[in-house]
Length: 210
Image (cartoon, rainbow, N blue to C red; front, top):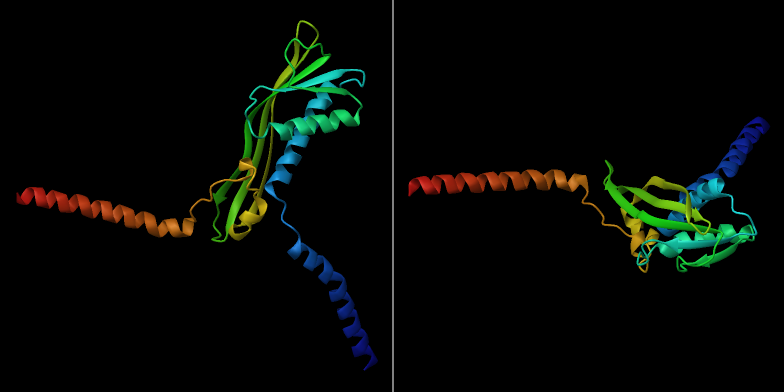
């Protein structure tokens, strides 16, 4: 009897220890699109500064080449955060005549999310991409130190019903069109083909009868 109680107690403890991890994994909050885009941008900025290595005595000008892009502020914020950590002077979007030790210019090539169909009816593939062309200039002659495209991406799967939770209405670049589920398309496409074929056959015989 004691042996049976001991065995049951061990099983209970194992379940007790494992369940919190299981529950956490099931209830873990899904990361929203804006947070992922921020992280991808941060990775790119880290790569830029790994090459650039600005001195704390420098003043760095950060300038977007497409000023109307709605996602500019995210890129600027990531540069500002990294520069502030090193105590470097910062300017934003000043004229080309400004006296600066270093200029960082960026152009957003791709910044956003796409949803792609999967074999699972309730799931979509989520693909977020940040792609920036970045060049740095220095000195009065604006010597180009380097020019490079930096691209980071993140891919996972999300439930269709969770998409409103991960998008932010005030930021269009966190939103994307939800594709038609392939399970539905496989019924619709043959119907369209048959309808078109039937229409052509009908017109053919009608014209012949005249």
